[in-house]
Length: 275
Image 1 (cartoon, one colour):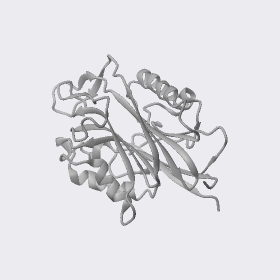
Image 2 (tube, one colour):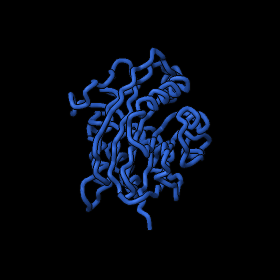
Image 3 (cartoon, helix red, strand yellow):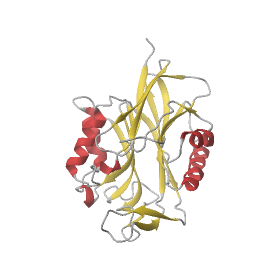
Image 4 (cartoon, rainbow, N blue to C red):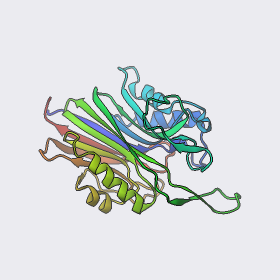
């Protein structure tokens, strides 16, 4: 049987529960549920790194420990989009251009985790726009909306040696302003031009299927609805393939609820030729 790999993308919402509450126990539950996906590569959006609001833990490391179980360590990378708590104009700032400058800084961003060896990593930092976007506030907070600056965004790529061949995996989490998200997606596509193929783009793109696929020219591994998780109405979470030589084939695809995240995870199995 030809070898295959399972990949998935999931918006973790930093481990929030249905009330929007963050605590280390919430992340532990989310990590356990993510491990049950049984994947080889996992892309995660809305990840906290040593932020006080989530118990000052390194969420990527906790997740990697759950994924490995009793097996070998996974290859992981966290890419900070901002330092400090996101969503507040007074407590966050764009992450440093060099991701190694402040490895212990309380941050928020995305993570990519692989069971298989990573040959190289690469990051793209997208400049924040001048937009101020509305964020809903909880009941009793006075005004229903808080207008905050759009967060900087980041993309993370890894070239992975898998049983199905060398695969370039890219993940990102784009703006919830549709116009800004579409411009960012095109920026990611340009950045990917010199990366090896086949290339798999996973992430919360905050764009529906038609726009996400049309803006990239990539093939969608699964067309479905992923948000909100309780009653999905729109697809915001995607697995897209740029595979000009048809080295990979989709053999299974579906969605799954991960703990109390407001997004469904998308899981795809890809079959390829041996290395």
